[in-house]
Amino acid sequence: MTKASEQQASTGVRSRTKWDVYCPEEGLNVIMLFPSENAANQAAAEHNAQFTPAHTAGAVVHSDEDPPHLTEAQREAFKQNESDFAELEKHSRSVREAAEARLRDANYDPGGPLFCYVCTCSSFLSSDDNGVVCQRDFCRHPAQQHA
Image (cartoon, rainbow, N blue to C red):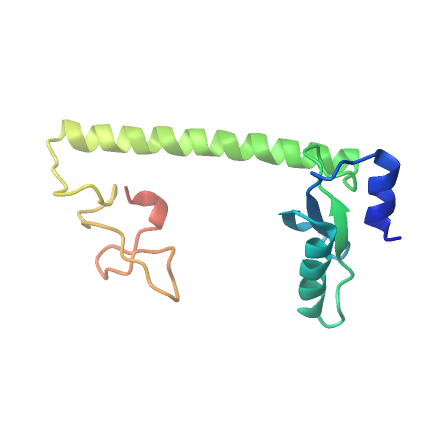
C-alpha cells in the first residue's frame, strides 16, 4: 500500500478524493487536482524523470487547507508575503489610476486603449528575449508602466 493509500485509508477519504503530486526536493505540491491516485503517480513519474538525479515526488491526497508539510514559520512567511504583495498591488493600482487621471486632466488622448503612462508610446511592444521592457527604441519602459 502506498503512503497516499495509507493516508486515504486512515482518514476515510471517499472516492471523490482529488490527488496532488508532492515533491520533497521542491518542498511543495508541484501539480494538483488529479482525479485518481494512479493519474497523480503517473504525473509524479513524469516530473521525477525531468531531473538528474531524479526527484522523488509522489501522490498525496489533496487538501484545501495549507499543505501539511509546511512549518508554522513557513505558513506565516507565506501569509506575510501574500499581505505584502496585496499591498503592493493596491499601491500599483492607485499609481496607475493617478497616472490616468493626470493624463486625462491634461487632455491627453493616447488614441487607443493601450498606451504608456510615462511617454507617448502607443502600446507595449514585447519581444521573446526581453519581454518586460517595451521594445520601441524611444520608449524602453517596463510593462507595468503601460496600460
